[in-house]
Length: 199
Image (cartoon, rainbow, N blue to C red):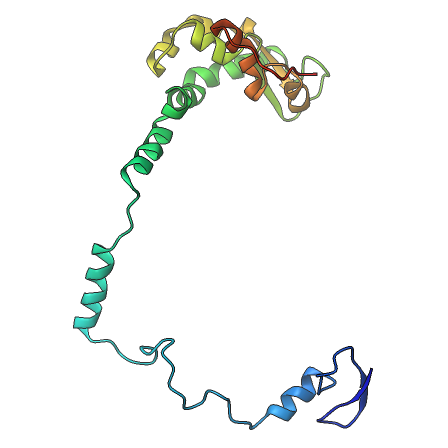
């Protein structure tokens, strides 16, 4: 549709019938000096803008915000606390993370890397490698009934270098015990089985 610009009187193509200007520059030139539609009108959007607040008003705002702080209901607070304590995962989330961050775990991992010359035992890749437990770490913790970091540090079965191997990340992901795959080892011991089998 060919229209005529209201500012410069040139012809231009537009798909909108209501269009009046050929460009943003013409629109700005046409509106220059026009009084804004809301100038001088009182609005209740933010009546305090541009005004200095008295100390009494500031104190009232502070007190109101302190007293009106949002708090979760009791059951939600308990769920959050359980998650932080690791109770939502059988109470193991907290201390397993601490065990993996302990000095003994780091020594075990370095010993595995040194024995395998920092290369993947499957494909020989070097660079970013990971230390994998041949017998899964979570299974060892359950088998030896470890409930704290101190018990883990004293359990020699966790720190056998023979139970470790160096893998690159792609090879590590293909192991059956990677990430949640450890359940394949743990659940059958408790009388459960997984509906989905890994291919």
